[in-house]
Amino acid sequence: MPPTITATDHPLDKLTGDAVVVAVGKGPDGPLPTPGAEAVDRLLGGRLLPALADLGVRGTEDEVTRLPSFGQGPFPVVAVVGLGAPDAAGAYGHEAVRRASGAASRALGGRRTVVSLLAAVGGTPDAGRLHAVGEGALLGAYEFTAYKSELPAGRLVPPSEFTIVVPDTAAAEAALRRVRAVADAVALVRDLVNTPPNDLYPAELAARGAAAGEKAGLAAEILDEDELAAGGYGGILAVGQGSTRKPRLLRLSYSGAGARKKVALVGKGITFDSGGLSIKPALKMEDMKSDMAGAAAVIATVCLVAQLGLPVDVVATVPMAENLPSGSAYRPADVVTFRNGKKAEITNTDAEGRVILADAIARAAEDRPDALLETSTLTGAQLVALGTRTAGVMGSDDLRDAVVAAGKRCGEGMWAMPLPPELRKGLDSPIADFVNANADRMGGMLVGGHFLAEFVPDGLPWAHIDIAGPSYNTGSPWGYTPKGGTGVPVRTLLATIEDLIAEG
Image 1: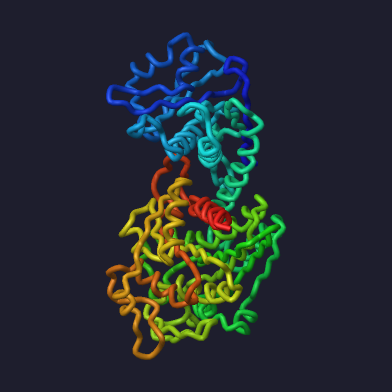
Image 2: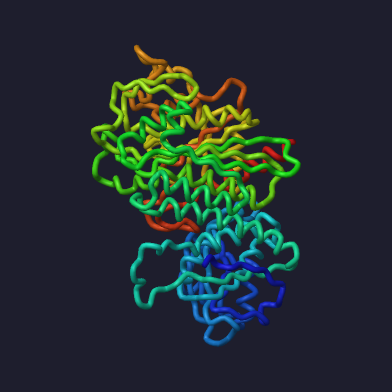
């Protein structure tokens, strides 16, 4: 069961729990207390802050210090989490609070009930800070244990109940309903990305996506390989023909009351990517189960939009295939014909994501949306250019910049990238409309964007979010981000859709 989260306005000395969470910032001469830390310090008779100084606590990001209260308060454990340095005005951003809340959740395994004073960071909490505290707490408590046949004895189970102390519980509860919905959507993505590919093949991913959509009240449609052939989806069929587990296309549709905008979502669903005949090196190939993270994100996002009842029409078009080498696999030098009639010469079967996305973008554009948002683990070049935590965003200038701004607000790193016209020449083909991959590795992320742009009709605002790094954490957990699937960019997609609604 997912953790629960509630709000209370009860005095601190009237609350009980297995731990209380407070924060300190990083100052030039030691930790900087926040109102919550000062309140617990008073409750403990002035013992907390001197203890932190004696322990050498610095207040840096992701630093968590656990101290016993020795019976001096209603909480046996005090968890003090670092916020990092404040800005020039002495304030801490929402992302610093979100990360701190997540780091505390990860550090409090074995503590079932947790009371958080992090909403008091910076004074009276606003909706943004409350969202940050709640999202961090729930996302930091995530774990994936579905394939553990026996959990270790003495395992420290993440907290299952969070209580946030606020001055106004009525306003807070309304905000926390949204927090719970967002956290559930992110958890769905993480679960799907973490599921092994032998259990999450195209037909299964489509079925799980349709089930999630139908639970949220969406209309769901799944096209099998015969229907894909009849519909002219040559790209999806080409990539999927090397596997015995055939490709699918999932469509999830939401019609919001009072909608004045229609948004198309597209996400790459390669349930496992060996590279096909252009096979990848064996090292780290197991991480390629995450190549469907874009598909999982758009499935979860359209379900989240429906759960929140937003006044917008959203249709998710999700192509799914397994890219394997075999006697029936598509080959370098093949020419693929897409749904919109354009043709690509295949020069690299490992550039398969754009091949299935081409069909999906063409189909999504037929609905005449007002904007198209696409996300995919498209290129290793994204990691080379921007690292593991920052997605590259390309497309129409205004929508691209809106996505980047939305990501900044919700704590998902995004960076605007150009589509330099000279790089388009690298896709020229002597026999077809274009090739699917340029042999020149320079600007590979941007060349991938150019390929996708070939399938976006003129005048349609669109954005491509390359999440090759940010969607799957191969390193250690940090903040509210676990190892494995992260759930990026669900929160950015939601924020962008809400911005489009606000435009009218």
